[in-house]
Image (cartoon, rainbow, N blue to C red; front, side, top):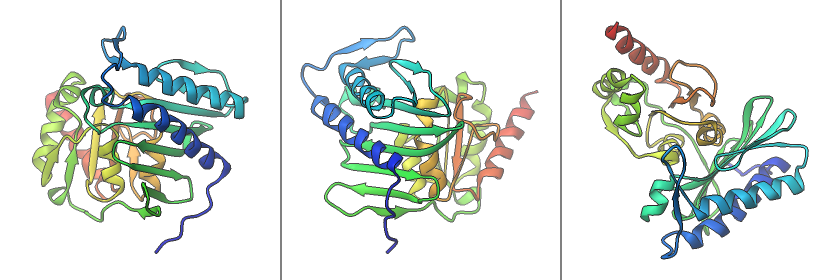
Length: 269
């Protein structure tokens, strides 16, 4: 069995932040008095989203005062080459409906590259995490952490794809690309939010793609997928979390998936 390496101070701190977040979010999950508001972009926000981000941001300011911060609910604060990127509750729509597929996402970006990622899903009793050069890990409550790795599937025809939602791809003008991918793979499903990427990192899904995503939706996922042996780009193949799209794979399938997307786009012209 692969041994868990000693976490760096940054990863150890990120795991502390995840524990802080879980202690706030989990008691509010399925709470009868949960407050739900609508933001200007017509997405929902709960009192748990706001409380988690406030607590995490305050802890970072106290213990890493020179680091920057970017969060979904409170925006950004200036920093140098280091920036913490936080989604207090990824999957708010699930959270407010009582569906357990939600998590706090915590990333550290250094010189524009996500180097630490923690995905903490307390309703599942699971935490996934990685730091550059340290492998990717799954930690179930009450058990020892275990290393995770992407699948070895090498042909699209044998692959399982998670695409988040048809509406995302349609509204971005990529519906033909989604249909082409679905036709090319063995199985297509929309598991949704962070869970699709964690299934990918564990070798249970082989491709994930979505649109209308922000850096706080993706930054924590990138180190986990990459350290699990996968590849993570945007839909055009660029290594960024800031372009509004994502394509993650087990690595073997990435170029073929990109080619399928491009061919379908070209056929529209």
